[in-house]
Length: 199
Image (tube, rainbow, N blue to C red; front, side, top):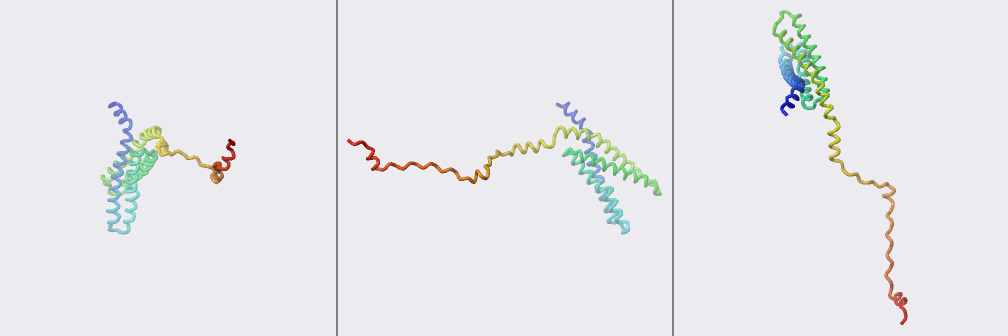
């Protein structure tokens, strides 16, 4: 039994790593986007550039961070293949943001090593996340084959099913019931005397 558990853990390792990476990147991107939006957007001394920094913080980090965390929950709990595909698409978009940020660092002077290292780490994290998600897609397909979606619904319907009572047609239900036959009247005393033989 221990060997079966180890084999199952090895088989589902890409899925576990994908969920863990999505959750971590969701928290990091969400917090960084929140700090970026507040510090460089709302607290910016230059009112002209404040809305632009707010828009960048929301689109590049805060909203993708929330979506990463949501996809991690959907994959880990519901085993949703759509969430995995959506996370791959979102990671590709985020990879484009990271490459754009890295290229922009070499066009701005002076070149600072810290933003360059952060951009490289960002690219590496996105590439690794995409690799984990692609390896986890076959596991999600196998899980869907083992657990069809309609089995639970049919089982619930079977448990709450009630016996169906027969329904009479409208004409039959409106037709009056036949009257019961009347009982014969009791014999009278005069008739009884007439039927007795004379002695």
